[in-house]
Image 1 (tube, protein in one colour):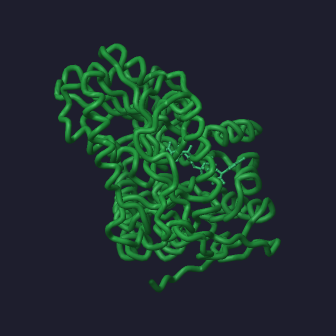
Image 2 (cartoon, protein in one colour):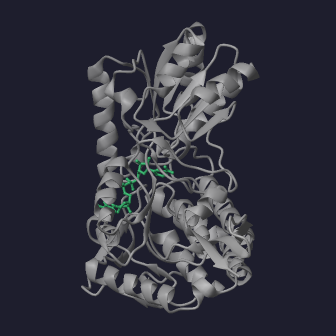
Image 3 (cartoon, helix red, strand yellow):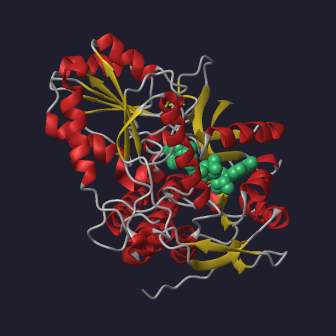
Length: 484
Ligand code: NAD
């Protein structure tokens, strides 16, 4: 496919190379071919982008632009994403290996996120509150936070970016985005669309580079007022420390090790379907993957048998082949991590019911492929049950009572999301109320939409994206009192 892409940083309205002249090759995870070469920015480029965003916030018109006008620009971005959907989906699949079906679905979701925040832009007004003093006025207003540093991961490159860009722009902030250094292509394209939509110079800046340089500079800079980060727990902890210098506002969307509780009275076929979709979508590289299956003992054998039968038929391959159900992992480094994790499971005494290695197909040997893998005989103390592998791996534990199921579901440092499958709606509600996580799906798994808040309990993060709460992350609240 012919693509129209300027492979540069976007700083203060200009497309520029890294000052150092350094570049980075972007690799196709399907066959390890170089698909693009992009600038490798460092602290110097980042400081320039921060200065542009600071100037645009402190002295530019964007924060004072009527919210309806900002909303119209955000809506235009949604329209341009829809116009260029095929090209964006192609770039996302090329960069991440995910199937075109998944990438097209992502693009629909992304346009939906921009549309949602376009609509909310002028509905974020303040309120008059009761004043305790006669002849006075007390009002509460919401204002943009300021200069935002936005750092995104590689698994859903543009989806995660849209959750940050749309509310930040709608509320009048300026920003510097640093996409994952391994998957920058769709974010680059979207910055060109934002320019076309009329986002003024300096308001949205893009810096391509590594976490230790660009990401760290954003996190430590005294000129950045907020960091919105999506990525792993260990990186999140580093960012919290780096951001403490000027007490930046922090929104952290971190990892997950998400339980999926299957009761014996569940709709069996639906539960099997969703248990598989919940994990093997995008080869398990999903923060909300339902990797911990917690299955009622009486149906364990039948359930595992049904899963294994389906998994054996999984079609693994190129994301551009319409038949493919699962693409490769993102990188050689990540593949090694997943292999090591499976080795740990073996050593811990879990049993591999299916998978547990790389596919033998000669056509897949150049890609970072790993077979969908199911471990049975797992217990909650095992590392494979506690640590996020971020790959196509399910662990299966069993329970005999509702209390035990909830206890196992909650036995994690993470608290991002979880599922319950049962036809007993009262039991489902009881479990959902007790599950300590930001999202609980009942008879469903991995469903997102723009007006539902997303975020984690416990070490899965701080703050919420999407929904009205997603706007609140990007606004300060001010009380103004006036004697008349
Ligand atoms: P990562 O933490 O390695 O990297 C994420 C981003 O942080 C990248 O852009 C990286 O360059 C940057 N970074 C790395 N070191 C940094 C530093 N010292 N300072 C500032 N920035 C730094 O994560 P990843 O491997 O790209 O993504 C996978 C992780 O993301 C998983 O743990 C997954 O669960 C999580 N994730 C969470 C959500 C969510 O909504 N909660 C969504 C997607 C992914």
